Amino acid sequence: MNTINCLDLKGQQRQVKAEIFELYDKVYDDCAFAGGKYVEEFEKQFASYCGVKYCVGLSNGTVALHLAMIALGVEAGDEVIIPANTFIATAWGPSHVGATPVFVDCNDDNWEINAAKIEAAITSKTKGVIGVHLYGQPFDVDVVQKICDKHNIFLMEDAAQAQGSLYHNRKAGSLSKLATFSFYPGKNLGATGEAGCITTDDETIYNRLLSLRNHGMKVRYYHDEIGYNYRMGGLEGASLTIKLKYLDQWNAKRRYYANRYQTEISNPKIKLQSQPEWAVSNYHLFVITTDNRDDLIKYLAEKGINVGLHYPVPCHLQKAYSSLNYKVGSMPASEYLAEHCVSLPMYAELTEDEVSYVIKELNNY
Ligand SMILES: *Cc1c(COP(=O)(O)O)cnc(C)c1O
Image 1 (cartoon, helix red, strand yellow):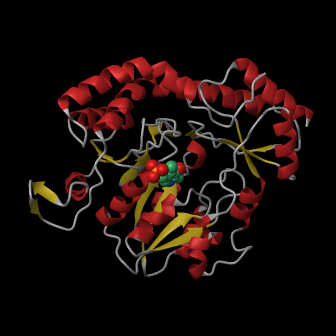
Image 2 (spheres, protein in one colour):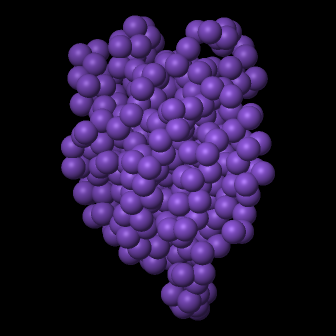
Image 3 (cartoon, rainbow, N blue to C red):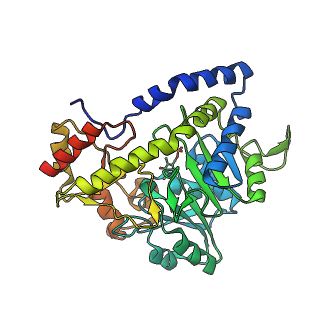
């Protein structure tokens, strides 16, 4: 058996190469490189896929978070509540407008943001909450929305990991005021390059985003506010249009393999993320915890299985945020996860035999 990695993009890229190259040809001949009609086509299709009115294509998921903060009125000195256990870019959103990310702990069973901790973290400076569908599994949006409504603050989704995930049968990205997505190549829907977007049903926010991403202009060379160059590239947009057609099929394969992991891993040393019945994950990542992580990683590596760590340091303990003075021990569930998490191989192009082999070795461990 060849080495099995946590993620291998090559199979997927091979599968869609001919189709994408054919469309690249058109983008090239039309010189539609920066924004343009191939991006617009993707925006239309992705909005419809998510079940929202609008999608604004952007250059990556991190700038999507930045523009989301501006569009939601977050300013210097404000506070925005986010989970401590997320990819750091969630926190860059508030930081990039001079606001402060306020980290809260996760639940210790499903690892999603702990709603009770949100309520306790709200102050007079709190503008809103960025919920994260971590690893592709939706957080409990209705519960968090209720808290936000009670305190008159916004809720938005960081759906970077959740293309095609479902919450009570509704798509991630359609569950709050607005949602940010990343189409980083390794995401379930990944561009052949860097890309991201924001989805929303709010027409005012939509129009503001169109202007902000394009130098603050509606009419060429007339700049109404300080803007950004955060447009999506045409080649990236074209690749996403092709790949979107396959997303459900790829997610279904991931769900099938996730189900095999869940039903066939029987080693008591391995603990799984709990699955609320209202959440259908896209299994962007399949994360387990174990007491002695280094030992498991070494064992698997000897068997030719490479795993990932998502993420080894929670946001509140990152050096970048040392000035916020969070202490070790302040977010026990997130810190436990950071120290014990292991991401198993998970992507649609794994073979049945490879998954069987990973399960066998996990059970032998
Ligand atoms: C990938 C990711 C981002 C950032 O997206 P980029 O496109 O890499 O900038 C933000 N939040 C989460 C949760 C992510 O996983």
